[in-house]
Length: 326
Image (tube, rainbow, N blue to C red):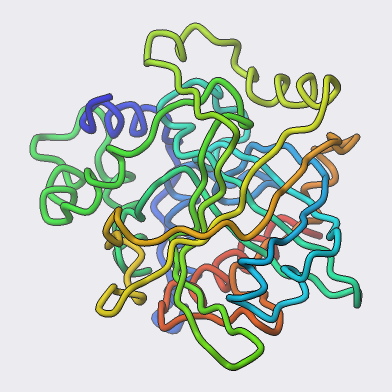
């Protein structure tokens, strides 16, 4: 898929809404959510981004290699219940699953720990993030909103992408899967695993399926608009879906504070555990409204790195959550 085609189709999906201003004292996280609303409109009870999704449940069991890296109870080998939400991109709750604008797809995980607490991971099918900062992310959506199909060339979006080469690099890594179960998802922010001896290792998460299957653009366009949302429950009725949670280990000099900069492909990858999904949640549409996934909701043995986007995402998700709940 050509990057220009992806961005053009994303513009077509935008909603015509009045330009949103903001007070000088608004946080950049609030501005990001406002910019998303400016592109996609506001939909009561719905997330500002990754609006369309489905919730499933299962369990996770860590490996001995994970125990060597982290003292977190999540990885100690016991069976941990988990709630997972798969989603399409964009802020449109009715976006066709096979459209370019539905990429990248998301996978958010909430692990229910033995003491009643929770720890989250928020991943998606990009291999690297679009931009390094929250201000850049805000300005990217504002550039989309300011670049309707009839806009003079070069549009605001053309100019923004030209000055941010990380955007085409990131978009080049995505495609439409034939199933949520056949996509690889990545945690784009770096986290630090801490073991019982106090050893610290920066990692980025990778959630790998048993196989990756992508559709080409023509195949994706022929799919029913909700094919991903209907296929996954049908698949789970036939048996569990397996994913492998892995950690890509940073080496000296690898950047941990910029999610738009990839680490070299030759970095060691360690399997942290097996994720087994076996049940679609009844009434998923209502169930997902109560779920808030926060990348910075951590447990002992897992710490945030120096990536400022972790706090930004936490705050932006909280803003979006406050707007979709009574």
